Image (cartoon, rainbow, N blue to C red; front, side):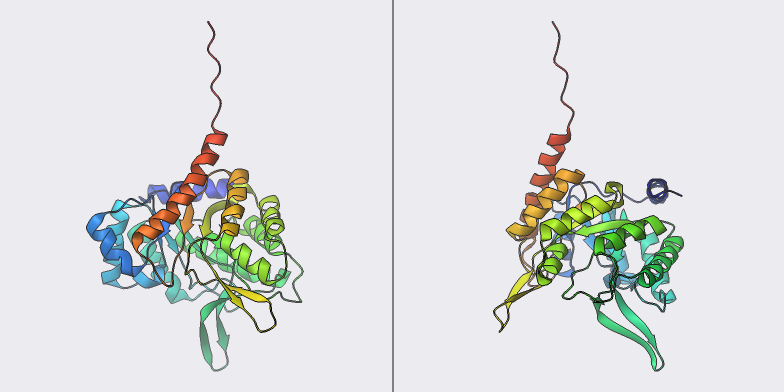
Amino acid sequence: MTLHSFIANASSDAVSRGARPIPAEAGIGLRLPHHAVVRQTAPAAAWFEVHPENYMTPGLADELAGVAERYPLSLHAVGLSLGSACGIDADYLSRLKALERRVRPGLVSDHLSWSAASLPTGPLHLPDLLPLPYTEEALAVVAANVDRVQDALGRQILIENPSTYLRFAGSVLGEAQFLAALTRATGCGVLLDINNIEVAVMNQGGDPARALADYLDLIPAAAIGEIHLAGHAVCPLDSGRAVRVDDHGSRVCPEVWALYETAIRRLGPRPTLIEWDTALPAFDVLQEEAAAAQFILDLAAMDRAPVPEAAHA
């Protein structure tokens, strides 16, 4: 099956189960402290994205289902550990599937990372999204895990490029090459995190604009199903250098906005999420950031609109 046909079939299957498609507009990451605002005021928002791990209990699943009745919803997982050689945890996947069936999300995604391992002493679970070496062996592991998740859910998932702080000496593929090969092998899509490109490439002494161009050149545009925007911290080191920390704790910085404009001009409008997880502000601040993204999306849509033919007398 080709990538395009897989995406079309996955989208059709999701809609047939009652999923509300995610529009190519700016959405907001919904965190638990803002549930009361959403429940009581039904604020303006094109769509919401949540971490499903926070809702895998009956009461919270019920609350999320209420949100899904009013807004398109995306599930952005952090627990699949797609890079783990020990495979996907069956219990976790079962609970994710149950929640997916309950709230009917328009999109499901996770990260190009690992956080679990099988040791002689027992299973190990780490509270972080750890990077992978970009090798053919790692690609085979991730592809097998993505296949299992997509088979279990009966739908396409999106894989997000990670924020990283080092480069593995053993990597033989670039990150964009790795993700492009993964889309070809599994039919998965890509969640392009623009902030993560800025963080990772600046930490490694590279050029974020060049790295973004690699993504846009190597990954089929049709495979990029969502974009993430967030803020990050710049932390000075004793050496005089600075490290960028992907803390999702501030407004999107000008450099990331510039990369986003470049991506949207190239790709056209895509569902775009404002992520904010630490130092959570008032909900209206998130709406302001979403409005800034929406302005860029609207300009791109206008640029791509067909020019009407001139009337003839």
